[in-house]
Image (cartoon, rainbow, N blue to C red; front, side, top):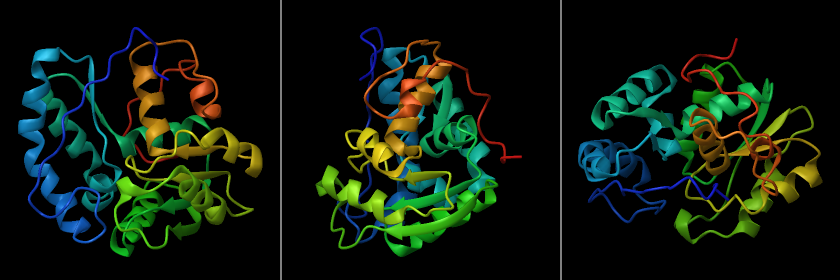
Length: 230
């Protein structure tokens, strides 16, 4: 998906609060991930990154929209480079697409799903519908077909867009099909994160086959994220 001239490097956030991706204990584990940000960013320092992302949408939900700028600034200070969050990338993508009303699809426990609704409402969007994926034991065990069904179930006629939240949910392969079936844009944490990275790093060619957002990546550099939709 990413251009051949772009390299992507990863560092896992560590915590002892349960199994990564597990629904049980997810709220506590998500908040504790913030304690491991310094170690994770230090491990990436030798790469000399041009940008860094906190690819964990639920962290932003639980710290709240009002705390988004501070979260991004902390990541920038720790890494010494341009920083953004998955939620910030989603916000920029929704603004780019002109979305005002969205349907929210989440794979989280109710507490994080509710925090997600609150986050997007605080960001200035009308959440017309919210659907949670049933019977999730671990988000990393989920399938594209389950993610597709979640997106279909979450859609509401009044929504401009379907937002499927969760960077760990396998969504990238179902976006194009879901958009064709629903007749509207579908934004996911995975797609928005890549789109924003491509845009701020100056890539000017779209990525075909993964939805309209990535197909038009680089057409317009997004403004700095963090502001409420006006």
